[in-house]
Image (tube, rainbow, N blue to C red; front, side, top):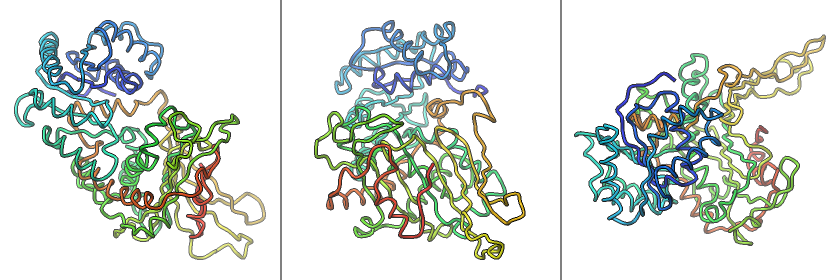
Length: 500
């Protein structure tokens, strides 16, 4: 990536000693440093309850970078220069006095690094602490008016609430201190190269956009499958479930990128305006329709990659009779001129046979079987697959005649892989998103109305599920593609799930 001019700033990570900081944030800042994307004056300050000093924090983060950064082994000279950017400040999220101490420390660091006072706050903390941190930042005078002097911005990690009411309340708390243009709600899926490529693929190639509509598309399937279980997050999953954890944000974001109209410009509000329109066009479902168009699942003991694994109810911090879903499938209709009548099938699951995120666009078959007299009795539909992870790429399946004297059609695939064409390691999603936030570009971040529009639909499903608890959990073995009811969801309309 060529360097992009930007203003130097002070980056404050609340929760800077946590898992997210170690695995994603600090390694991403290190990569940006190595790529010379950060102005040399930029400083990074970790704010956390646990920790001792700048030196101990730097040693801790060096181990994290060595384990999780893209480039290995760590470059000692690069690390030495990067470590000089890192600082640590111990404090409590909820104590107002601690913010006065933080402000004094920031002023010292900014003087030392010759920084102009621009500040980016990253809230790598549980949702329960966001309101208090934002209020304390406002009360302590950390946040500048958006149009005057140095800038102030805040990055908020998902989940953005747990239903529509809580999301609205959280947005109100944030917007009492920060204006909307200062708020960057991060969803790391939007920073993935293949996710960004959806719009380029659609709108930057003249051969695809003409058939991106109900006339040619039969259905769209969006899959987020993980082979892992809840990985020690049993307490979180007991409160959230996969509908909140994956579908409300990641999956609906992918739906918006596939279904949105071309924006008037590739600018933050123009792109996000079109995404909000998609969410507002999703056909509302009655309670009966929710029960018909959704499937819940929970994994039982089974085997993944040939190794036995426990069921969800045997996971730590999970109730032995839990009814929380670890799999969800949902049929939605985007009721607008482009997509009316085309079903979008959304699914996400834990303990699937493999880890894969993909968008499969299945096209309608020709209306007349031209080759039936020649013995061709069935035609496979054309399918365009956008692979988001882990094998990033794009594949198109179509029919071709098998060589020989008889007319036999076999499906073949044209396959593009990022790793084979571009080579090397691609930037991590957090690298792109952090850099965009520093630049003030909110194109790949969720806007307030976008978050609340998504929650409006998801909350309706959650309310119906609450009033109609499942009777069959657990209902799929670990290592399978989910419950039989999910197969029936498509089969009753003559369709089937694609097997990645």
